[in-house]
Length: 339
Image (tube, rainbow, N blue to C red; front, side, top):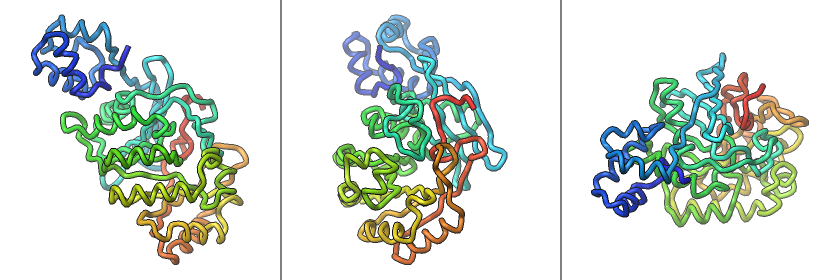
């Protein structure tokens, strides 16, 4: 059965028309979907026969809160979300001066196998539906009693490997009839699926694209990111340049600093050279604990690396670590919270 809450308004209109009901019923059904309902019984203004028709063909998928951990260092809450088939994913709520951000997952597990990230340790299970991605926001807002202002697709999974559901989730999240979150407050991270980046160019969406780069040369990147065996760094940066030219949107380049792997002065200079003609900025992240044989560099190493990039004209920030006391920081999310 298809997922009812992932249907677009146009799709619901077609179903309603085929059923022989009046068109305005489709808008009513769609608005119920955007409220994050858990049952067709909640649709009090929809005729019983129409509800039954949808119930026979379209399941209502719901995100359930199974467990949450709250950081003692910052306002960070990590949620373990149970899905309809009893699979689980994690998402993270963070409070900033500008409002609340939620880091959402797009897959149960991950195929990418990046050496510094624990998300793929247990393997890949399945893609999340669009409404399961959207549903993480509804769940967090309901639990915390707040309104989410920013959404980052940087949790478990590679968003562009679940392309159709990710794009549909973005469309649902920004819909004025639903969560109404501006696309400019939505960020999607990718390890560099070049063909999908060009698909994004065709769609001309306005969200922020973040590239998990982590190395500026192929040899180093291949050691830590299997995807680099398929696409070279120069190919990826060419796609990024084309994306920026076509969309006029700046790209954020994520660079996880791993001691003894990609933290040398030479690495910094090479990165600056590769990004010279790009309008994006670099986010430096000191690798968080999780995988064995991965060492976190000192703050001084991060400052040195940043200063080299800045000297070469590359806008650079060092991302503040949030939620590492509850394993909620970058690279620490898993598809089960068993620790």
